[in-house]
Length: 188
Image 1: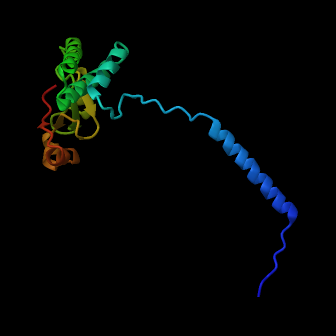
Image 2: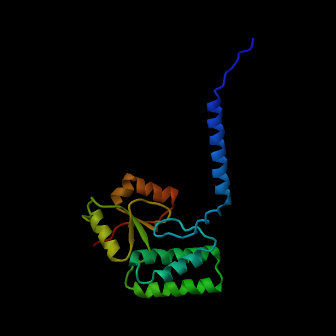
Image 3: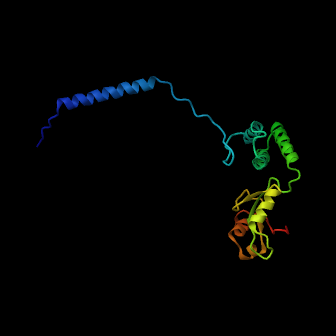
């Protein structure tokens, strides 16, 4: 049994008109040049630098931003430059530029004992009487960077005897996951 379907002629005409309009629009778009490719740019601070030549990228960034970066960011970048040069087994030119940048950074912070080091804290509130805020302040004064957590870029964990005895999360991470050296806070 077949059903007869009636089609309105005005409906068919409107659909043909819409199809023709779409065809004209797509033809016009096809004649236009493609949009430009996105520019590969490097943003810092913080994010991971992804480039085929990391040493060159960091060195040129330091040259561009000379004098406008604060000391802590510059120290971090110099440390990253040294690590990248060591990882890449950089050529003589890259090693020379890294050495020159490191020498200029070292001259600026020669009196800062903890320059370039990142420390995490799990200390304070015990019999020593030194609080975590005081420790953080003295670490920053000596040129170190204080991290709130233990992660792969932390160089040392400052942990009180009480924190080690209680096996705090920071101590567990430093011992097991990251094998970070643990030091006790010295007298102020």
